[in-house]
Image (cartoon, rainbow, N blue to C red; front, side):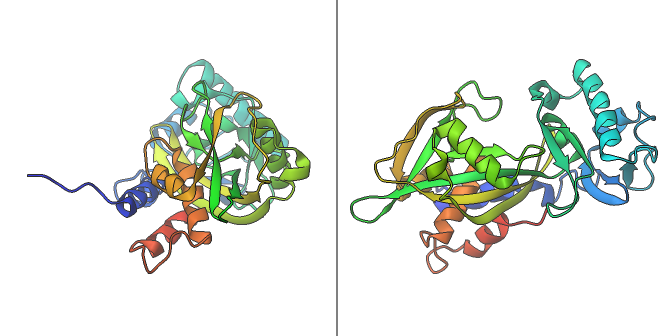
Length: 302
């Protein structure tokens, strides 16, 4: 018996469910301990990680109820950051968790919400072990062709990238490292990845956020991407910069739409493109049965 192939809409819905699988039945949500700092819930610690942290009682207090906390003596940003860093460094040397093999010497801030003050910073590759919120910047670069139709610039990631090598990606994107603002990150990633000069990149408009919580074998990933639209001059062509991109493509939206539900696209970047299609009325509620599910899946609370 033959079965029909899933439609584009069904594939897009599967993508959103996979990227929000921490909210689905059967996830580790009910097994995780809440990571609490100074009385504030900042993350989710999977059981295997909680077990490993019990070896460091000078840094982590024994779990109480459904929570794991830092020792009360670690009262400052500096003390917390340094103490946890030493634990993570030792776990890395022991090859205790796969995610630590991607150690980057790049820190992410740890806070309950983006609008709150940071309570400590943490090595980027370790954030999934604690399920702390991660923030990034994604740039939709586009132009209008001679007929006025939108075409989008996409990047193909280098085959040597630590994550999603060779996949299609937004024109420029990057994580929000400790000490950097959203706008600084935007300008930095545009210049480094696509050689977009600041005089052009500064025209990028903040238009949305895309938020989701994903889990896999490396931990829990509550992430929110600050999304920018950048209308580029028609004569401008991005250039390979720091080696994180292999090549750039300029494609019409109908091709981009088809590709975003394929295995060729980095999943969270595909979500950013889907958000673009909705905002620019390329996907509309009268023609898209899952329109409301799409909007909800792109903007889940962390």
